[in-house]
Length: 227
Length: 112
Image (cartoon, rainbow over all chains, first blue to last red):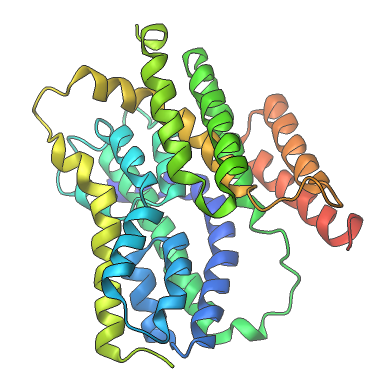
């Protein structure tokens, strides 16, 4: 019963993720099929890895030369931002028992964005809510990539721009974060850091430099931002 | 040429290991029940807003502002999302309308 309640309140907030993941997941499934990987492999990759951008980044390494060590290092680099997500979820995911490790395993950008911003109702089990968001987002991704792999080429509706749902999701959650006045500096810092990193390091390498700038900015602004 | 099944399985394990390491390392370093260093709880409070800003920019990283249509579809899409959210404060509605506006912009208005 309490699971049902958790999923009922998690589902509405996960709809934008469903929309965005459908587009990106289907695209991933199609790409996998062009590299000679069928539904079973697509399912395995999406179920076990569940890291959209890294799954795309790994595609060139699924054909040709076998380079496991390089792929491992690439996963560390591409996913370095998750270190920051995990840092900020330390308290939120604590005290949720075994669900904690499920939430950690399934922490995508979108799941982090929702769970770090959501105000879980007092009468609800926090852990179950976080886990419900995590599992829903994960199932969308898995489902979409397999659909894309099997029937992707039959889909002819013009979905161009549908993945903007994820951009809009981050924009809205950004605004929700800024409701707390104390977060204004951090929000602006994040945007400025990313733009500076984008200009200097380019679109493909912006995340780690942006994280370094954010980290430095937070340390420098610590006295001002600490209560 | 495709990797062999065994090689592909190893690649999955490598991705899982790398990804899980980045997602779990802070939880392993700062286990529950122990007092967290002040710096860490400060960072966990301030990081979400900063990362949300980063993610917005990340989504827009391939938009070229120097060439036509100069990021106008994105500006209009985000503008309508922000405007509606300030007005109605309904998360789903803001995202839904913003996405539809953006789709109309790139499919109908700014057709290249």
